[in-house]
Image (cartoon, rainbow, N blue to C red; front, side):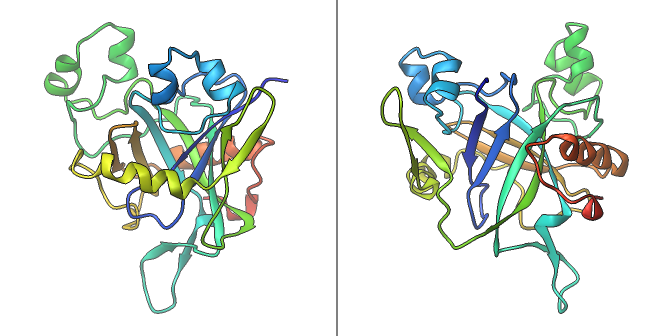
Length: 242
C-alpha cells in the first residue's frame, strides 16, 4: 500500500501545530529543504523517510475551517478556535471548487484558466484582474479531532534509519524556523480573526509564509466539506457540516 504524505506547520499566531494529511497518490507536496539540497526524490523525502518539514518551494493551500474547530463564546459574538482538542487537516480533491481572493495580486501564480491557455502572469493578474486562486492550489479541510490538546502534541515524524521512524515534537521545529519567517512576508492576515468565509489561502515554504482570507462562497465550502467527509481517512460528523 502506498504511504501518504504529511505536512506539519503552525500558522502565525496559532496556538498549536497542524498536521496536514495528503491522500495516497497526491504528488503536490514538494521535498523539504534538506532533501532538496541533497538531491533526494519526493518519494524518499515524503514517503520513505516521512519528512513533514515545509517544502523548499512555495505551496498554495486553500483551507476550509470546519465547524468542529470553532466555538462561539457566550460573552463574545466572534468565533474562535477550540483549544482543548488537536486540530488537523486533510487535503481533498479539487473538483472544480471556485474560491476567489479579495483582489488580484501579482504575487501569486496565474489561475487555472490562464495556465491552460498559456497566458502570462501579467495578463492574468494585471490586465484581466483575475482573482481566482493559483492554478496549483490544493484544497483542504481543517477540523478538530477527538484527541485532547494538552499543549504539546507529538505529531511529526523524523526518520532515524531505513526501517524506523520516531515521533518528534513539531513545536521544536517551529521555534527553530520562527527566525526564518520573521519579516519575510508582510501580506499575512491573522488566522485568529476568523472571516465570514471560513476559508483562507495559505502559502508556505521553508523561507516564507502568508495567509489571506478569501471571499465567501457557501456552495464551494459545502462541496469541499462533503468531499472531506467522503474520504475514509477523515472522521467529521455530518451534523456539524456547513
